[in-house]
Length: 464
Ligand code: AMP
Ligand code: MG
Image 1 (cartoon, rainbow, N blue to C red):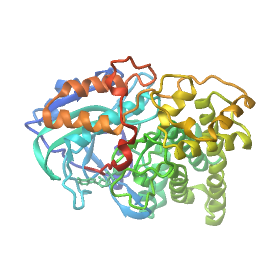
Image 2: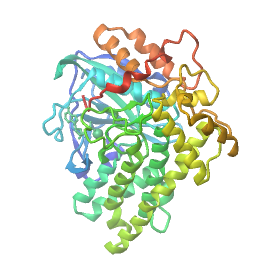
Image 3: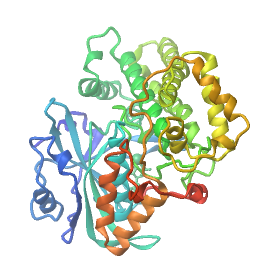
Image 4: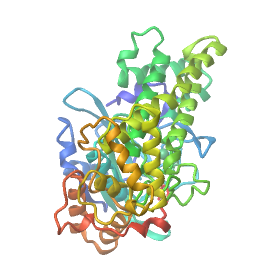
């Protein structure tokens, strides 16, 4: 049976067969997520297809894309992934069922097409935590232990993940389309994207310029949300940016403990390109790449198209700033709509950095919640800063400040226990706790304890 995605010209994918893992075992199954879809397979059906005892129900594809990786253009594609199904939820929205770590494809280049069990479990923890925090993301449906070993840091257990995404259309998919140098293919992709994600654009005077505006809008919303919870994606290459506005491609991502604007955990990001506070600027850079890919559709006159695209991208900083400071204001319970307000927020961040304060707990402390040890008041500027709070209109904080986030030391410990010691109890308890990030911790809640300084030498690894 055909997939909806294969309506696109054949350049955009190639048919592949996911590896059959005969010895695979299911270690994580997200029944809550599966239950949102009428035509979901059961966990047993899924496992039998992973093992090759039954075949996948539809055609299986690897998607083609390109991307700017650390600023450099490359032709890429699903080198270790496969689209195996598409399901509609109750609202009628289509979602991809996609395997990650499912073996070599024609896009694998020098890679082995595989993933470690630990990295896939890490994605399960992080993506489900991001979802529970109320942030748009691809979801984890399942993780399997493939029952074999792959070569990474020595031999490591192999794993595979099934993720659900509202699509895998990336900025890099558009770069790939532009690279085909055939307007009909670019148009096919843009029309497909509009029909799938932004149908309201279809009837507007310039659908493609409006597609650009929509993608800018959803990316601003997404990055603002990452900044709210201290999330660092870690590898914001254009191939890892979804045009649907979901967090995608969990690799060296991590949550920041102590506030430091240039926090960067990724071992390969030596220039700190994707550091915490660089994320808005990088998003704008990526969106410019997206705009550039759309230009031939925006206007037949290249100069006019460029001017129209520049106008949209140039509006990014102002749009982002408005959304970002409004969000920071909500974290603090005040309305921030003036330059003075923005400076007040910036001063808090300076105080946090100066006092090496924990980002998450500082906001809980300022909200009057139990926050453990917080160092803000060791700054001579703090009292004066705090006294200015009443000069701004007061608003509800709501669920702006999470209590439990996936802290690096816990994520590592839980993963090591599961993968090395076969202790799934801790993994399951941790997953469960992360589903309630805004709920107060009880005294015996071990997951809210941490050493604030533990992050300083912490490193994450990409694509492992
Ligand atoms: P990532 O940075 O993980 O999003 O991946 C960037 C590109 O490298 C994508 O085209 C991936 O499909 C590819 N890739 C990553 N790891 C592997 C692997 N082990 N084997 C083959 N391709 C890979
Ligand atoms: Mg990627």
